[in-house]
Length: 504
Image 1 (cartoon, rainbow, N blue to C red):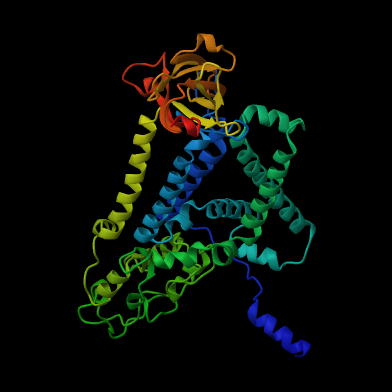
Image 2 (image 1 turned 30 degrees about the horizontal axis):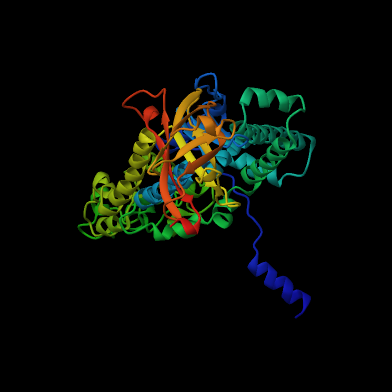
């Protein structure tokens, strides 16, 4: 194959990126995006600095992923490693919530709350502040490099970089005490992993939000390719009503014979003397689109359902004296009904349909179950590992001794005491490695450190007569719990007592 043929094939497969310069617009959906962006960015940047009093034995950071001590704190909730199923539950809720939103209102997550969308929107506003609106940006991009252009570029990139550094810096504060880590980071005393993490997140935020932008949504993100399975004919999506907008004209509407179906909605919206559609081909819907698509070409991969094209089109319709909604949220079923002259289904009825109700029921059910489990879980846990070599020891008085490593987890931010007792093993006594067999009994009292796991080596002696393997329970009973609450709930573990085969 010749070089020219290879070049032609490469050109056909890979198209050079065309710059997208979204135009500023005002309207309901633009204001909604402002509100959501402000809320999400505030939550992300401020949350690590919030304090939450858990007592003198636990960190006071409201949200903290404490990897060193293997804890996750979120206000009054504390998750231990063995409780990872709560994290799995939250991930499942997030997935079902995404399915719910998509089946109801399309890619609303992508258009309003996705981190890529939020940071890209922030970067676009910075660019607009420095370089001007769409036309000024296009003109500046085509202009040769000059001191003025270099100054604008340098200022813009410096602000982008500051935002990217703040983004990476905020992330690491979720994994350590924020004020302490901030001081160490500024003084150059933080761990290398902190600087590496900030560096990676700074680079990705700067590149993805400043330069790649819509390419992330169209080429890198898998969700646009998955969402088709979540959508159906009753999902609300941003739709161009071609039966009302076509045929297009340039500028003001001409007044010639009507060409609408007699009973169509378009015939009710315009005088019968008008033959042309409402679209004047102003391209404002394209100019404001952050991914640069033309919604008039129908649903497509690049549409993130941000609805800015609705604001732009409504503004134009107001200027030319036409009803709003040429571009609007609509379902495919409603599109067919409106085209035939019918009335669209009310939004509430569209949202409250079996599919979305099932998703919501699953989402809410998992959330309620997790809340109930969190409220009812015991604040004490016990696990036991029997020694395997030797499995048992024959004592001089004829009894058999088994050895165990008992791990007691105190999930409260205060010291506690518990009584460890035996249940279901007749004639058995126990004692700890630091104690004496002479003082052995059916119970031993242990002191537990706050918010920590305590390991204790224990010995259990029982008569040699009996089965080779006997199942019994070791129970940890709190001595300082509040009656009727989960602080008084005991923890128990089932374990096997081993005897010689000949003692059966």
